[in-house]
Image (cartoon, rainbow over all chains, first blue to last red; front, side, top):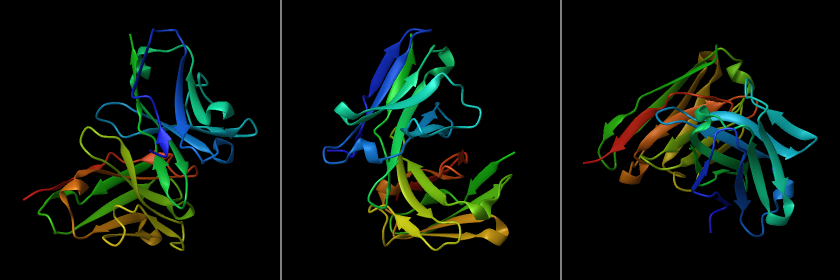
Amino acid sequence: QAVLTQPSSLSASPGASASLTCTLRSGINVGTYRIYWYQQKPGSPPQYLLRYKSDSDKQQGSGVPSRFSGSKDASANAGILLISGLQSEDEADYYCMIWHSSAYVFGTGTKVTVL
Amino acid sequence: EVQLVESGGGLVKPGGSLRLSCAASGFTFSSYSMNWVRQAPGKGLEWVSSISSSSSYIYYADSVKGRFTISRDNAKNSLYLQMNSLRAEDTAVYYCAGGPNYFDYWGQGTLVTVSS
């Protein structure tokens, strides 16, 4: 089982909200981790979006619109990236990441399609 | 303007070696940890290695431990990755990344192809 699991794809309409999940493997408690989120468009390197541990420990990447926000669902042991007011330019792959056992671990990635 | 420019990629035979370089500018390179991340064709991101600002702490993914060596030269604002005993599964675009939140800044990447 992967350390971080993300849905492979998600589709939504322009203007809608999209909630991307990053589920931590059983036995790894989401509450203890800062979760980092990255956006990658085809042919380009990833771009840092934000990090989220709690409402008092979070940071937005430079120039990243506020419609990108982070949260957690403790009951699901998951980190969440919420994209509000989806725009066509948000179509991309999204990756989560944590620092775990002296290694950075990336999630499996979610491809977001804006219909 | 922050810039990270990788170089040194190319085609190499299995068992061969390559040394990647990453030239940094536009930020205080010596203050931050730096990292290498790779992405195989059509695949997701895979962390490779990290080095702290003063080189005191170095970490490797299990997949490259014992074969790759990360280093940096703060006087030259440069990051390096020495890759030995290369395998076909090391074929990927290699990115250098770093910054105050560890992976704020990314280079455009350099392609490493391991094939006979």
